[in-house]
Every structure is written in C-alpha cells, then in structure tokens.
Length: 356
Image (cartoon, rainbow, N blue to C red; front, side, top):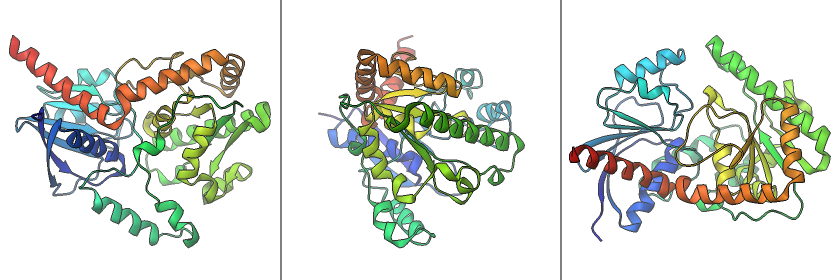
C-alpha cells in the first residue's frame, strides 16, 4: 500500500511529545505514512512539534499545559497565538473554542486531545532517553531507586481492559506544587488553589471511604511541610507501581493541572479503561468524550464524595463508564489514532476547500 502522507518531523526532545512521536512511528510501521526527521535548531523550549505534511502543509502539535506560550494573562497568550504563530493547521492539547477567534491568518486550530507520557517506540528519540537517564543519575534520588525510576514504560503498559475488579476501590495519588517556585502572582494563586483542593479531597475521601480509598501526595520537601500525614515514600509513587494501582482501582480521581490543563493522569485513566471523577474540564478534546458518559464532574470535596458514592452503588453505571473509556481510547486517544485523526482532518479540510 502506498503511504497516504509524507511527514517531515522537526524533532524536539520532550516527554510531553513522546505520545505524538509514538503515534507517528506506529503509523509508519503500519505503512500509512512515510517519515523523515531533522532536529530542531535554535532555542526552542516549549513542547511543540512542527511537521511538514506532503511537503506543503505546516502542522503544529502543541502539548503545552493550558494557554501558556508566554508569561501573562489568557488574553495576552491568545494574542500571542494570533500574532506570532504561522501554520496551516494547529492542534492544541489544551484547546478551547476561544482559540478559533484568535487563530493565526489562514490557520485552522483544532483540539489535539488528552496527553500522557511514556517511552516512545520511535527510532529518533534516543537522545531524549539518554538525557533523561543522565539527569536522574545526577539528581539526589537515592541510588537504590534508580532502576525503578528509569524502567521504560510503553503505551501498551498503560492499556487495560474495561473489567471491574471484584472490590471497588478509589485511587487518588497526586503531587503538590510549591508556590514559591512560580514568579507570577496569578500562578502562585492558582497553585495554592490546586494544592488546597487536592489535600481537601484526599482527607475527605479517607474519612468517608476508609480502606476502600487509596490516596496521598508524592513526597517532597514542600509536601512534608504542608501535608506530612499525606506524604508517601518515593517507592509508593514510582510510575510503574502507580500504573499497576490504576488497574487495581475501579474509580480514579483527577483534578485540574497547571494552567487549567487536563493532567496526564486523566489520559492514563482512560487508557486503563477506568471510571473517572474529575474537576470540570475547561478544555475540549476530539470525539464524543462526555460528562456522565465518560466521567463524572465534581467541584468540592463534598461533591466528590457524592459522585464516588453514586458509582459505588450503581455497578452498571460503573461498568458502562469503563467500557465507554475503553472505546474512546481506542478510537481517539491511542497514540496512532490520535495522530491519524489529525492527518485525516487535514486531508478532509484540504479536499473540501479544493472542491469549492
């Protein structure tokens, strides 16, 4: 079969982009696309990938948290998008409809979808893996955990069947951010709110559900200062163990990430076909991902308890949500499908414009 697309990737090493690289590589292996790769030159710092499709169309894949191109307000960032970015198609992880109004000239802006990170199967990210290993070796992480931390995870390690465990348990393992590490006042305020919400949700869920709830925060100097009783040892929050825990818990909790983004956990929960309870989503994703169908929404810790209780008492709804997320993952979020949808969308729009 002749490849449908020729794609030139301007490779930039970032864990945020591994999902995209993995999708391109899987499509290459399937024979659907050809790939050529050249490294990014210059001072790029943001997890953004530029791809030239069929030697003609400039396509940008943006995996940034929120609207976060520059330090500033939402409006300042939208104006940055409008005035400083040049592309034919722009696929944004943290997409909202307001972006369409600020789209650059002759650029179509579309949602990219959920994001989660793993070691890509692609042939061109060895430099990223090498840098990651070197950074861990040079950090203060205790050496006995080194092999645990650097064990590569593939996309298939996150995937699981929509089969409920016999005992329904609830999972919420998360991290806290130190506001002192953020320079802008609105960012400090945002982080403080994130921390308060996460701590309150864990405490209330522990009180209400006892041993049926597994929750805590990643141990750090900051977390031991503000929530010592909730801080978990390093080995308890190691990534591979966390992925195993997701599979062992039917209900998983997600909260808003930095810059209002959908955190990586959300994508990981969907890949594992879990039932999800989340704070309100302020960004859009492709496909038919819907409240009450794929996730339940909560705004306060009391609301969270009510939503957990509703799934505990309605096993059919729990099972249906798990199946819905299994289907959504395989249609829209699996790395090869996520990238293929963007290329097919490009093809559809281009062909429709030609037909006129």
